[in-house]
Each structure stands twice: as C-alpha cells, then as structure tokens.
Image 1 (cartoon, chains in turn green, orange):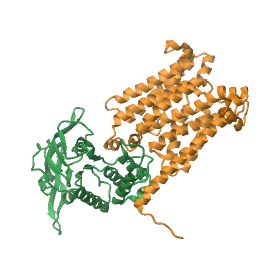
Image 2 (cartoon, chains in turn blue, purple):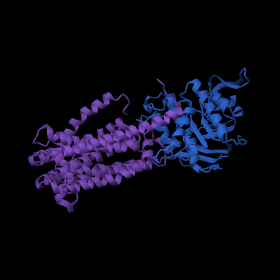
Image 3 (tube, chains in turn cyan, red):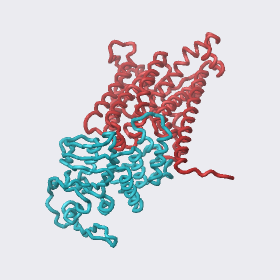
Image 4 (cartoon, one colour):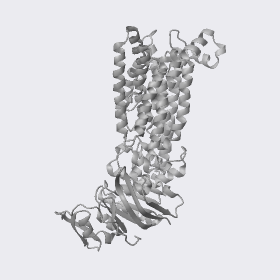
Amino acid sequence: MVALALDGIGAAYGRHIVLADVGIDVLKAGSLTAVIGPNAAGKSTLFKRIAGLIKGPGLVELSDSARGERAICYMPQDTGANAVLTVYESVLLAAKQGSSWKVHDGELVEIDETLKALRIEDLAFRGLGELSGGQRQLVSLAQALVRRPEVLLMDEPTSALDLHRQIEVLGFVASLAERTGMIVLIALHDLNHALRYCANAIVIANGQMAVSGASAEVINEAMLRDIYKVNARIERCSKGRPLVIVDSPCLEAPAAQPAQPAQKVPAPV
Amino acid sequence: MASVVLEPALAGRIRYRALALRRILVLAGLTVALVLSVCVDLALGPARYTLAQVISALTDPAAVSDQLRVVIWDIRLPIALIAVTVGASLSTAGAQMQTILANPLASPFTLGISAAASFGAALALVAGVALFPGAVQYAVPVNAFLMAVAASLFIYFASTLRGVSVQTIVLLGIALVFTFNAALSLLEYLASEQALAAVVFWTMGSLTKATWDKVAITALILVLTLPLFMKDAWALTALRLGDEKAESMGVNVRALRLKTLLLISLLAAIPVSFVGTIGFVGLVGPHIARMCVGEDQRFFLPCSVICGALLLSVTSVVSKVLIPGAILPIGVITALVGVPFFFALIFSNRRRAW
C-alpha cells in the first residue's frame, strides 16, 4: 500500500514565499484528508508542490509506489476550457498523455467505466463548451480518475456541484479510496463535508500548516475563530454527527499574524 | 421492428470509434478534393486542357506533346504545388499558434511575422538594402525571410522571459504588426512610383514566382516539422484545456510552448518570403479544420494542413476563372473566396467553434 509523507515542504513565486514548512508524518492509503483554510491560504500551492508542478524546499516522500511521481495526480480547480472536444475525447486525452497515437479497446473500456461510475455517460459526446460548471467538475474528476492515481489531490472538486452531486461525488471518492487504497487530499470550503467524509484534516493559513490531525479534533470552535474569523459552534445532530453552525463573523478580528508554527500532531491515520 | 439497446458503457466505445471513423472519412474527402483542385488548377490557364490531358501529362510525360509537357511540368505544376505547400504551412502555423497561445485570432499575420516580411521585402525593393549581402539577386525573399525570422525570434525570446503570459505574447505580436506597418508605410511614402508598385504587388501575395526549388524547400519544412508536432499530439491537445490542466496531466507546458513557437517560426517565415503576404489562410484554415474534426490534434493537425492547402489551391483556380487571361493577386482572392465559405460554416455550425 502506498504511503505519502511531507517533510518541511514549501514554495515561492519569485521572492514571495507562499508556502513554508508543511510537514505530515504519514498519510496512509485508503484515507481522505481534508485540506482546509481561508481563501489564498496556500492550499492550491500545497497541492501543486506535492504533485511536483512547482519546486521548493522540503521533501515529498512517496513510498511503496511503482510509478513514482506519476502516481500523484493533481485535479486543479475548474477554469472553463473552450476547446472543441467532446467529453469523451477530453477524458481520453488525459488517459493517453505520454503514450502512442493508437487507442486500444481496453483504454476505451476504462473511459466508459469511469464515466459510468460518475454517472456522466450521457454527457460523453457533448462538447466541453456546452457543459455547466458542475458538469465540468465531474469531467475533471473523470480526467483525474482515468489516470488511476495512487495519490489524488482534489482542489475544491465540489464547489460548483448541487447538493445531491456533492454528497454523491464525495461518497464515491471515499469508497473508491477505501476500495483501491488511494490517498486523497481534498481542499474543501464546506467544513461539514470535511467532518463527514474526511478522517483527517490539515489546516493551512498564511502559507503555513496551522494544525493537523483527526477532522473531529481539528475542526473546533477555537480554530474557526482563529483561522476563519467566525463565531461558530460544533453541535451534534439528531443522528449524532458533528455539525458546524456558523453564528457570526468575529467583530474584533485578532491581529493579523502569521499562523502558528506548524504544530506536530501524531500522524493522522 | 426489433431495436437493439446498447449498454451505455458499450455505446460510448462504439460511438467513439464511429466518431473517429467519420473524421478519417472527412480527411479522406478533403484530400480527394485537394487532388481534384490541383488537377483543375493545372488544366486552367491561357491554354486550357482537359483533365484527361493533365492526368496523362502527369502520369506519363513521355507520351504527351512537348508543349503540353512543358506547360504542365515547367510552368503550372510549380505554381499549383506551391499553393499547396504554402497553404499547408501557413494553416499549420496558424493552427499551432492558436493552440499554444489559446487565442482564436492568432496567425502568422496577427503576430507580425507577415508584416515583418513585408517590411524586409520593401527594404530591398525601395531602398535596395540587402540584409544578407551575399545574395543580392535574391535580396527580396532573403530580406523578407530574415525579417520574419527576426520577428519570430523576438516573440520567442520575449516569451522565455519569466512572468510573460500568453496574452502578453499576443499583445507583443500586435505591437510588431503596427510597428512594421508604420515602417512599411514610411518606405512606401518615400518610394519611387515603380518601387511603390513593386511593393504593393509583393504585399498582395503572388504564386507566379514559384520554382521547383521553392516548392522543394517549403515541402521540406513541412516534412520536417509535421512529425514533431504529431509526436506531441496529445500534449498539444491537452494545452487547449488550459495550462494548469495540461500541467496536471504531466505536460511540460513551458517547454512545449517554446518548442512549438520555434517550429511555427520556420513554417511561417519561409512561405511568406517566397509568395508575399497571404493573411487569410493562416487564420481561417485552422478554424475550418476545427469545425470539421474538432481539436484532437491527431485529426486537427492533418485537417489544418489539408484545409490550408485546399483553400489556397481553390483560390488559385478561382483567380484564373474570375477574369480569364488575368491572374489576380492570390492574397486578395483568398479572402474573397474564403470569407463566404467561412461565414457559411460559422452560421451552419451549431457547436461552438471556439
């Protein structure tokens, strides 16, 4: 089973440091980890750094993977491409990167299965330009999954989806991770989703890791006040699940300060 | 009537194969049209021949009259073929510019390569300046080529600078267009009447100075560059999904963009220096191809090649038919022929073309 560890990784654009000293002892196979934090905290940069798309200090250690860096797949936020391609072709080209022109039947079967699993097979021969934002997100997910990643980094994959699709996609990814032993890091703004689907959470603020650990422990009222600047409660619903209820923005925001130095928490499991 | 309900998973695979087959048929159809157009082009001229005569002159030159052989092989064939190679080169250059710059208006014309070539040619025609002193008798094409390459290299090196975005490259290209057009106007203003006429004629584009050497050179550039583009077919297609998406799929976007830009420079500069400014093909050829087969480069690239070649070949035919006996400037006719066809495609095509 594949395992991922981050050792003091960082990134900079020119002289501007956008991410510093993020460390996670080990992320074990089959688990979902939420990456949470305010806008522009450095979540996307963290993903790009892990995927090797940008360089920087520190070490991304992937163990027990036969494919090395190629096992890591970053699914960026959707930017709305206007290419004259059908959904099917756009998923095919994700699967075929770096290989020959010839398209084998096996590869097409895999695309069919991926589209079916995400229940977008009826979109297969629609043009990318005709899709809604939510449909495009599902296609992006198909493009990522068809590459059979062992580590999947999803950047706000549900931001344009309706409620039904949100829980469907997150539930699907969670069960896929469990079944295949894939490691999934997922940037989320909806903390209730993080609580429900992700065993662990990493909080990023001001380009640093504020805290990491089990979601239920990390997502608490103090964190919401310090990092998100909101007054909120964590309450249990009638089914016993913890829920984040946001009451109001913090009126006196604590003085802007760099996030606390990364607090090493026992390895999330 | 019994109907077969295909399982969706099965249907996707089968529908994709059918789509690919349809595209191959479109490519085959366009190729046949191109061959026909070249044959008609050969048949037309001051002396008209039948298609049968043209084909026998092509397939068995020894069996036809000397006059027919000389007219077809020495006079008309270089012109007909340079229309094909130049059209193909400009269209391919435009297609890949549009791909790497994510801009539907990108073409050798819009990025200032044609304007630079025109200025280079005008330098020779008006001021008698040969930028490469070793080839004074070829000063016009050599100047045009050197200026076109200089413009391309300027764009190339500008785009290697850190922080230069695709939009910046397009803006730089537009700045080049204006700069060279202003310089060209100044030269025209200062030119003698004779030199002015020569410059105007050059900038309108003409196939009539075609020689077998020029055909060979333009064909060679195509033969050298096309396989390199084909090798990157999947990566270039991925680029159309956006830089970030392409990178996430493992494409080295920066390196691919620079490499493609360098190849485009060659593809655009050489034809322009031989035949003058033919703006329309590089812009519209790729758009027609995109509407016919979409943007999967495995189909889009060959389709752009054939569409460009066909567009210029048909133009050559039309320019002979419009006013028999007079050969109208190819650059002018290209737009006149292409625009109505292009409009028809835009308005009949329900899918978004860009």
